[in-house]
Amino acid sequence: MNGHTITISVRPQELPEGDSVYITGNHPALGNWHPDAVPLQLQADGSWRRQFFIKRNTQLEYKFTRGSWDSEAANEHGGVLPNFRLRVNQNHQQHLEIPHWRDISQLENDFKIETTPEERIKGTIRFHHFPGMNGLKPRDIIVWLPPSYDSALKQKYPVVYMHDGQNLFDPYTSYTGIDWEADETATRLIEEERIREIIIVGIYNTHDRLEEYSAAPLGKRYREFIVQELKPYIDRNYRTRPEREHTATIGSSMGGLVSFLLVWQHSEVFSMAGCFSPSFIYQKNQAIKLIKQSDPPGLPLKIMMDCGGIGGEKLLLRGCKRVLRLLRRKGLSDADLEFHHYPEARHSERDWAERLEKHLIFLYSKV
Image (cartoon, rainbow, N blue to C red; front, top):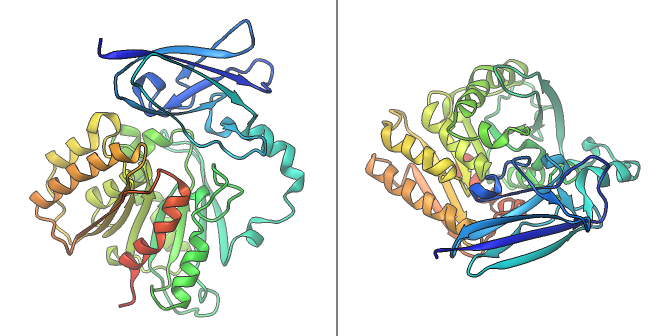
């Protein structure tokens, strides 16, 4: 036998009438992080349970939802729980408690939020809403403007397009309650004259995040939306440097993957990318196969990749190393491509926030 039976049982302390509990994780049997793909079964004792047969030595990471990321399991204070982890080396039964749910906690605590996003975020921000189009869901866009934007009226600015926009500036909108502090980091680096002044465009994700950020057809439409709709809109409404030499994209995990795909497939628009823990291995290495079968862009690129070393980062690291070898064989040099490995780093917003400074300096250094 090369696998084991894993039984996972959870007991929510509260559950709205008519709702179900779902498991989602880093394995096809767990739905590959789709929040509504794998329902648990209600038991007579009020718990929710499901059995899985998993290959030996598999490292599982998973969470629980009520069918969407908005309704993710939370702790007693409403904060999103970290990934549950399990190394499969024997038959195992796991019994867990769910103290709260993210959306219910937010509803209960809305009255406690006495500040506005403008007060919580350092600098000037503006919001835009884009309706759904071409199979894509509607989404919000948050634009962060550099310190001199409202005073240096003749100045134009480079732009970095960042994915998972709700996680960038505001812990209240971040799905983990921890944001990247992109506003504080960019402001500090600009004031220290370590980077040029930049505009940051945060693109909110949707419930289709995995497919939109992947090499799948919906991902192609998401990238086309950025190139054909969003960037022209930003260039029309803000004082930007629209040339490719001044345009970058940044993201983490699946956002790291789509950042790479944008610079690889649309190098006429993007010349730079910051790829944090990119998920090249998603969908059975589909992106790696795409890279292998394609010719490199004929234009100069500037790409920084990184990856941690704890938990699921170990798997992502393998994909990064495969892509690095491919890119070297396709002619990318050390001047085009920089990679950093952080053995003690996890797959988390907190870890990516700590590394944002290095990426911004690499992409937009004043030197």
